[in-house]
Amino acid sequence: MTFSTAVHQQAAHLWQQSFDHPFIKEMANGQLPIRKFRFYCIQDYRYLKIFNHLQRQVMDQLSAVYLIPRNLFEMDDSQLEIQERERYFQEMSVSPEEYRDA
Image (cartoon, one colour):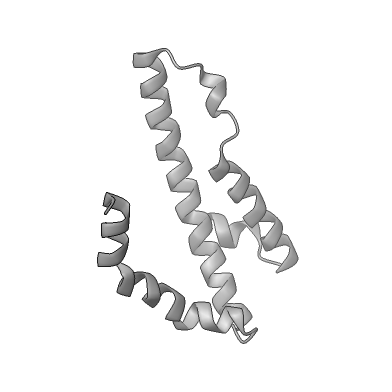
């Protein structure tokens, strides 16, 4: 048995709990209130901004030590996700102050 298979088996109940979470079920069946989705998006935006900042700090340090070209990190996935959230905010009429100051 591979390591990943063993870990997956040990965490299978947690994996299933993520699918059974009320937020996911409400989203899947179209019953998620917009206020919950707005709150999630704002919190997710904060997470992505902090993660992106941390990721750039790590990349700066790695680039300095291992001579990794800096342009490899110019547009990473987290930055694309941040831009996507900002489009959601426009559609939901969430002001920049709401999501940037949350």
